[in-house]
Image 1 (cartoon, rainbow, N blue to C red):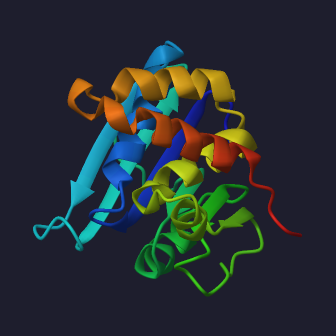
Image 2 (cartoon, helix red, strand yellow; image 1 turned 45 degrees about the vertical axis):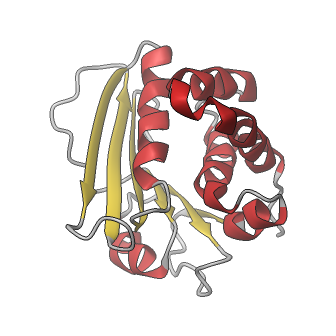
Length: 183
């Protein structure tokens, strides 16, 4: 994985917060004064259909917003894992929701983190924030930023009309940062 550029792909169903997670990572890059690309993609049915989001964070100019071989992949459902696992860059990092994806990734040349993010979020009375739990784990393992910076960025992107959700989002980030993967 290049230190100069991170190519991130997030994928799942519409309604799982894929685009929000991408927006968060793009905002994080902007806060770190990086070059940023954010490219959302979703099926016409939106909620329940397919959704993915490409984010590129770089110290140099970005030539194309397309992420065809991600360094970092986040999968929130089995169709996403089935579709994108093989496209990953050798040595990349894969994060997946092990609450919803029962098969383990097959690649042996990547680093894999299975996080039961839907279960963690549900157990903490915030079932809609599994995406943010995954983000916390991603940030911890990839060292894109520390928890305080992540919290500051989260505060900056939650719209005023949804400020009542800020505390839950910050808690979900912390749960992800604190989650330890069983070996």
